[in-house]
Length: 92
Image 1 (cartoon, rainbow, N blue to C red):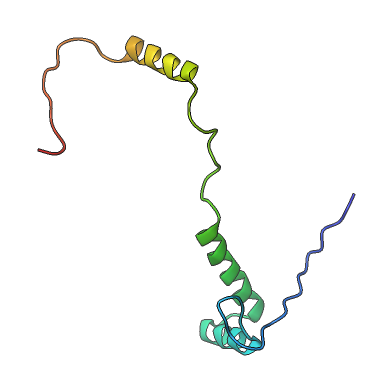
Image 2 (cartoon, rainbow, N blue to C red):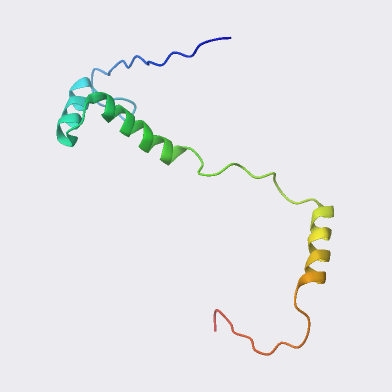
């Protein structure tokens, strides 16, 4: 069984770019936010994860013809029947 390292080495850039920042930038952020440098990195990664990763698991794709037929049958059996008493339109 392999063990996972709990630490990660961060190598800072020599200048700020869209792909990385300098240690001085991290220090400035830490001072501005009144947190330590590690917390700044965690906050940045958390925000990045929220922006990039999907908020939900992918679905199984389109329904099969058999599934559509089953849903239509279920709707026919369970939806109300009879005369429509009133109707409203969302867009007039």
